[in-house]
Image 1 (cartoon, rainbow, N blue to C red):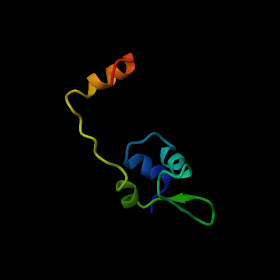
Image 2: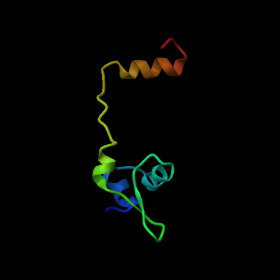
Image 3: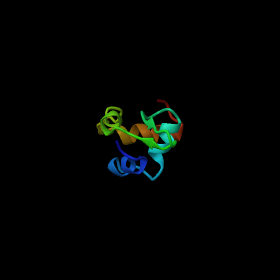
Image 4: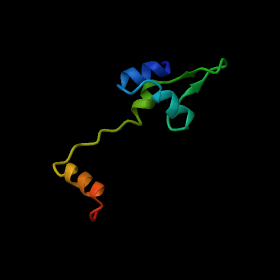
Length: 70
């Protein structure tokens, strides 16, 4: 089981993100009797998904910012 800081480092997240997501109920975790949080890396990895980049992704994002049709 890993500490929140270990999860942040493994996924290259900003410090504190794993803890915040766990406290928001968005990341599976275990709370120990002393109140500290631990994570199983396999459970977290199962929630992280690859999002492929498409050639027109930048155009769609720019259109959304400009308020144009979507």
